[in-house]
Image 1 (cartoon, one colour):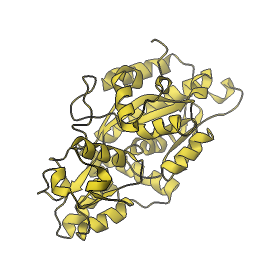
Image 2 (spheres, one colour; image 1 turned 120 degrees about the vertical axis):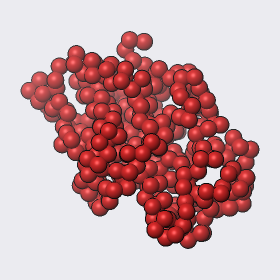
Image 3 (cartoon, one colour; image 1 turned 90 degrees about the vertical axis):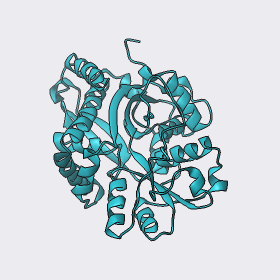
Length: 336
């Protein structure tokens, strides 16, 4: 399916005239919002930016740094971005509650990228009842999926567990110190914290007994062990403008090509990601755990048009969100 989508995107791109500066009334800029971190959603973006220098077919890619869902919501309300790379629940929230009615979910890009990090003897949620569970920022992908996993097992997240929201670095410290029983963590932080634990004589590993992606929602439209998590979303104003729509097609294709490149060339991609993090986020990351995360089989990138996953994608998003999200949230390709 990945190769089919890339073929379609590249064909669309080949049929679109290059957006050179002298073919437009002025420079085109595509504003892309995303978390300023080496998280699963953003790693392909950093590879793209380092490879292209922030310019694709004469279009400038302007990065809008975001620290978390609240700041992203503010950008959505003000329509301050053209494209956003984020967890689909966040997009549904921007669209429904944040006043971003013009936002459209175009492509599901990431299907797995975080896990519950805990001791090897933990076999089920029952083993963690009453214990401290660490989650990243409320409303983030790991937070929402973890709580839905608890609920699908018959538990109330806030009554049956002690949930604390903390940054990943603090999560690692508390797990290693034995002050928390488990934490849901995204790659590459998952690999980083597991390695730090080993160095301190503590055994922590992604739980295979509690698979956060199982038991929540199953569909014949995607493989078992996957859920549609990460997405590329775009504003309708971009799709309605011929030049901007072509710019988006080029960006979307490049983003997914970068994801494939990162998994096929983890060492080179890790160096590119670290360079971009330093340039954009004032972060001096270690490339080694990023390389290990990309080289492993835990991350799954596989671009699929949102329209190809309906109606199950909509039902899944409604389940996550807790109410029906209007069907106009899902972009429909021109040939449908």
